[in-house]
Image (cartoon, rainbow, N blue to C red):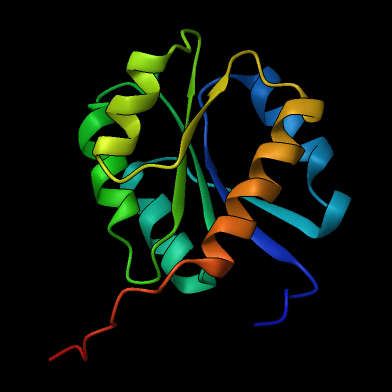
Length: 137
């Protein structure tokens, strides 16, 4: 499978600073960041664009991150969900993975951390077997 010219990445973040960092990486290394305002919108955008990576802020109000990771990771094309969190440790990483997520990215976001992890997730996504997409009735 060839890498598309522009790789869509969906971001659901709360901080203006994190939005700024993600905006600055959009266009670099073929990444094209699309912002969402809710878990539902992130899911819709990710599926419409077949986005291989979804960035999810743990501090999103009104959303249980554990449920959100599971919902977003269950996308028809098997997107890699990266949780953004102030706390990053092995326990949290295992929690994310056990819910179908890919990894954890520390806050505040920095471009030199975002790009390599997104590219690693993309590499994983491209090599992983894709879930069977069932016809909608």
